[in-house]
Image (tube, rainbow, N blue to C red):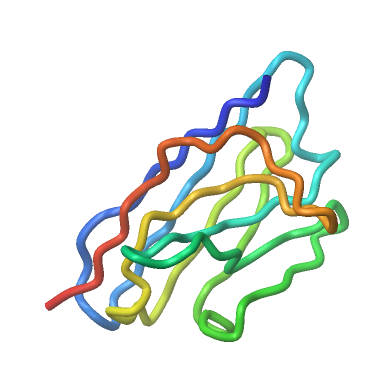
Length: 119
């Protein structure tokens, strides 16, 4: 069973920055074998994929965060990160990490980490 634990959220002013971390664990589990992604869910909205990184470190971003967010991974630490710059109020959401696969497969979701962008 894969366990995901997100951290690093908080309250930040518009234009500010945050770095989110995701620790993945499980018996014999290695994130190096999987594409990984950061998802977010704003109140009243469906969960959406905003950034993903392949096993080859190729990255893709949703148009809404392109140029502002950067996803990275540390396969030794079994960790995934999301650097978020130039934050906007519309970035307010609960952020989750999980695998990002072509078939949409995911592991059990962690509790997420809340990002609030407000003045």
